[in-house]
Length: 274
Image 1: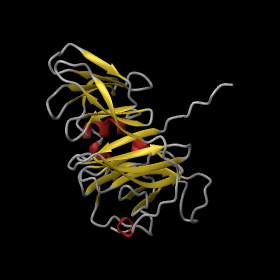
Image 2: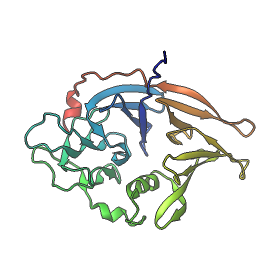
Image 3: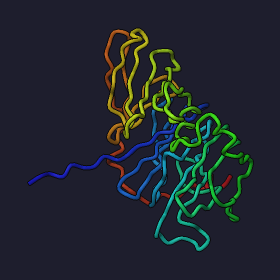
Image 4: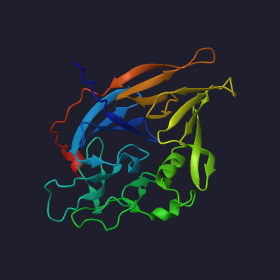
């Protein structure tokens, strides 16, 4: 008898640009997502709310101070209020999905958004803000004001905008499509290379003392955290890369999210109001 191997959960990480905060979007089982808040200074994790539906992680963003999360979601076929569509963009307080601002969409075209700073943001929605919600204290700016850095014909220009906004630089592009990226370590020890020439991204570490040598490693996602550590998402785990001028790259496990299971978690009062 063949033993069934458990399928690891999928992880997407967002790092606050001006605070020691990270946010994990955990996906699995199918049609379930969870938010997990990460204190990157003390490496503490706060399990947050679960969402039954789909979160389009590639269209989400965390504010620079780590206090707000903009996301694109869908709940096709699930029972909702009459004036709620199948898809929408919302802003919440992590690690909770409870919406404080919400824009109906109704399709999977467009949707999502990005923070330019702690107050200004853009979203790619088809309809105006839902009448039951507000953007108290925030400024909604046009999306196309920040898309000029990439060719609009590029199918993943939003991914490109997010990479640029988080410190990645374009190395090569073909017909407006960025293929190779680089990001120096903020602590000055090496740099990351990202190759998106194929369907799955490939990451390399370029050692500071060996400019012509690059080392590939397995990762669904990788970046530098606020302390300059190499952090990697791989098979439902958060790993930290360890290396020096004299040693090769190795990884240590920081957290394993595979055992988490959906549960009902209500947002506290502070997460349900601006």
